[in-house]
Each structure stands twice: as C-alpha cells, then as structure tokens.
Length: 496
Image (tube, rainbow, N blue to C red; front, side, top):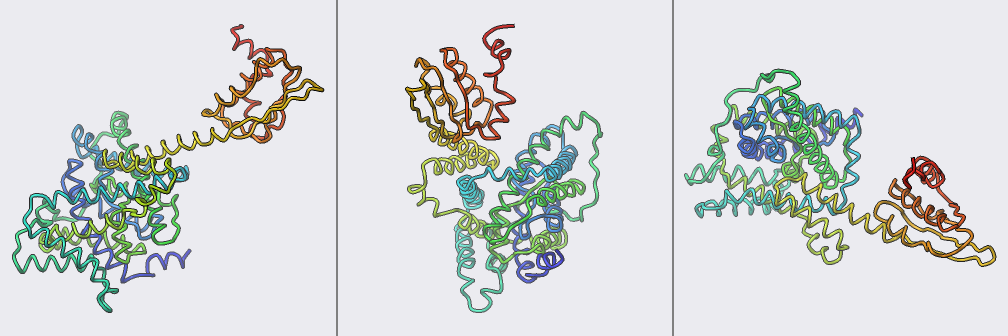
C-alpha cells in the first residue's frame, strides 16, 4: 500500500505538475460558466473546483482523474438557487456528499456493470459533441483574429510533440496557452479573454457553515436536489473513472471513489462552494498532457486558487481562443471515430443503444438522462433476445398415454406469454410431464405462467408433474407457486 501511494504521488512529478497547470487554466472559465448556469457568483464555482480537486486528490479512488464543479451538477441547482438562495445550495451540496459516502458503503458502484459498451461509447460521443458545442459561443460573431488564434492553437497542440527533445518534455496544451497569451499581449490583439468571463475572487476561501435553520423543513426542501446531485455526480464520476481506466490501462477503486466524491462535496459546501463531480473532459486533458498521479489533481486545485486570487492580472489576459483550441482537441480525442464505421457491422440493437444515448444526452444536455436511456433500451433489447431463445420440445408416449414437454430457455416476464402458448390444452391425455431441467424461472411472472399452464392442464383431466427444477427455480416456486395449493387456487377461482 505504501509503495502504491508513493507511486501515485511521486511516480510522475514533472508530468503531473505540468499537466495540473494546464488543467487549472482550463478549469477557470468552465468553473465561472458553471456558476453562471447555477445562478451563483463565479467565486462559488471557483472555490468548489479548488476544494474538490484538492480533496479528491487525497481521498479519491482514481489517480489522475480531475473532479471539480461541473455542468451536469450545476444544471440540477438552478431551481433551488432561484427559489431559496445560495445558503440552501450549500446545505444541498453537503447532504449530497453524505449520500455519496453512504452509496460507497452500500457498494452501489456495482450497478455500473449495467452500463454496456454501447452506452459507454454513446456517452463518450455525446460528451465530445457537447464539449465542441460549448465552444461555439466563442467562435460565433467574432473577428477573424479568433479563428486565426484557435487554428494556431490547434497547430501548436498537434505539432509541438514532434519538436525534438522538448516536444516530449512539455505538454503541448500548456505551450499553446503560453504562446497565444504572449502573442495577444504583445501584439495588442483585441479578443475575448478570461477576464471578460466575470469577476475573479480576491480572497482565500474560509470555513462557512450554511446560514439556514437545521430542521425537517430544510431537509424536505434540499433532499430532492441532493439526491439528484448525488446520483448524477456518482454516475458521471464512475463512468469517467472507467474511461480513464481504459486510457491508462489501470484499475481504480470505485468504492473509494464514491466515498471520495462525497467527502470532496462536503468540503466544497463548507467553504462556500457548489457540488461537483469528475470531469471527463478535464481528466482527458490531464492524461493527454502527461498527468497520471494524484499530484496532478492536487496541482490543478492549488494552481487554480493561486491564479484567481494572487495572479488574476496575468490570468485575465489569457485569450479564450487558446482554451477553445484545448477543448476542441479534447472533443476530437474523446469521440470514438471507429464507432461510425461499426454502425454497419455491429448488431442493430447495439447501434440503436449507442445512437439513443447520444441523442438524449445532446438533446437534454444531461449525461445521466442519456445513460439511463441507453441502459433501459439495452435492457429491453436483451429481454427480447432472451425471450426468443425459449422453446419447448414435445413428444407423446402412446404406451403410457403421456405427453412430455421439454422446456428450454429462460422464462421471465417477457417470455411468459410465449411459454403459456406452447402447450396443447385440448389434447386428451392421461399424464403430462413438464421437464424443466434446461430451463430457469426468473420472476413471479414466470411462476404465475407455470401455475396457469398446470391448472389449465389439470382442468382438462391430465395428471401433471414437473421435473428437473434447479435449486433457484424450486425456491422461487416453493414461495410463490399456487398450483399445488388448493386453498390458493380456490381464491384465484373466486372462492372464499
């Protein structure tokens, strides 16, 4: 454990510090923009990004992942801030953190196994589109200088790594920011800068207990918002952790990540910051800039605070075009371009899930809605496929006047009607044997279907027996089946 911690903090010092500086600069306009979305002062988002980035570096489960104030959580705060004000937002942030810690102890991260590859691909593609769309306001109704600077920035980002020696030593996004800032400053080019985004804080954050009555009424007000923030924040954080796991070919502790996100949000709320979660765009910037350890997130948070409080005069002259170039690079790198070719080769259901995820996310600007939609559609397709694999083989033994049905496949809510329809209820036989050793009964709908089949066959005078039940199916039938319980059958048939 000590060796792992040393590697996380000291295994990539230069790369982590340089990547952290790039992330810090890129975080600032986003934190300001997310504050505006939520309807709060810019310092609320900036303080939150500082606190969350620093705390998650220490307690998070994924080294190299960046967490801060995000659009996904900011969108959920709008109504609360509008109706009740900032102080209630701080309470909601703290409560969301507590709920995330509880989720960690309850191992709710395991539900991420329901997120299929198609949903993950759709999530990434939608995020890439949203990141690019978020840059459009900076590229519309502007002078040609902005386009020239953005193009120059992209050129630096993609070509600088080919420069001998230093090309591999310094992250190209940072060189892009420094070069374009110097160019704009010395040539006096009139373009939009970070300083035009809003006023930056001029003091360090302080401990701030929310000024609201701690009673049931307050809890009733904030709990729905806190639940939404906790769920969306964990969903985005865990999916981002999966993406970074894949990019770096490493594994992360998702349970620790849930708790870490909760602790970070509590810390943010206690210094006057809004809730946040992992940022996939910034995390990819970090990884592509050479960040791998916890030091990169720590550096990003500390440098952000230093920049906005002590070096704001320098920070204010950084052109937005330089950050637009960085974010366009992120959107290009995030989009799974091979998924476009795979639309023709993948199963139609997988492609439908991916496209639905993208459409819903882009339409609603809410990553959680898209992911839930993808999971739901994927589950429906899976249920449909499983039901198609259920069939029944039948043969008749004339010597004993016995009809045997061999059931093969999964019987559950989507295949139960088909199961019922595959029996011949009008055939006059002495005995019916239902062999289910190659079948499995999954739910009470399946049990009810078996009850219906047995009762209908017995009503026609057949002696019905069921053989081959596996242990799980037998347990389910023992608890819920009624075909061998006369008093229950009487109730169903209308008796008292």
